[in-house]
Image (cartoon, rainbow, N blue to C red; front, side, top):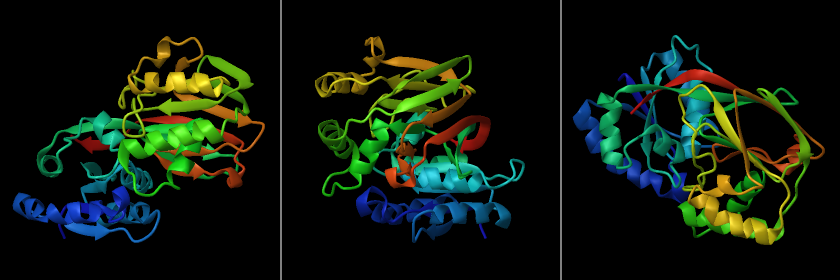
Length: 303
């Protein structure tokens, strides 16, 4: 057994990542070798990563996009912090937003080499618990409301990937889905009690392959930023859309930003919620209460 385990999702980036992972095997062998595991079903990487700590692996590597990273992180968080393996990332998915925030090499060949020789960066994770006690973590962004509805829409689109897919999903969501649940939100030093169209919690600054929702977010500063938006018209949302892409949206009067280490959200109806682009709560789950708590320095990332 090697000290490094590489977990790859052959279906990441609409099936493109399987071949990309295969192309990297020669470099892995040249650098000293590692063990490989492919995922076979949703959340399989959570199980594999959790088992890796028990088996004694020192490093667990996510080969894929934000979804693969999300699952591997959730597996690692099941392991005691003292024994928790380090996280390596080879970004071969569609968005790769967390890898961008962490300063991971965008070139997969170079990223593989960093797995064997990179420096370690301790990054924060956010623990999420719903009203039923279901627990999950995210390391990049968590979206409640509008951008989670975009995430649901993106799963219906075939033939597109990456930023173009997310942009198309956004335009469709603006046209067809425009709910603003009434939310009661408490956070460090403040509270909200109002209809909210969109609430996005950022450990990292961007999501969806290039929407810069919380431009000032740092994944290792011990706080999260969250941006929220009250009900606006569809036309106004179309006007705001390019501003979220070039990080000028915070200049707009409707867009508000706050920092915290904890949020508690209660809503008057079911909330769609995504974590790192993975669907935590579809509408049919009827989640109306959620708590988010920052866990500082939870994951050691190789960069």
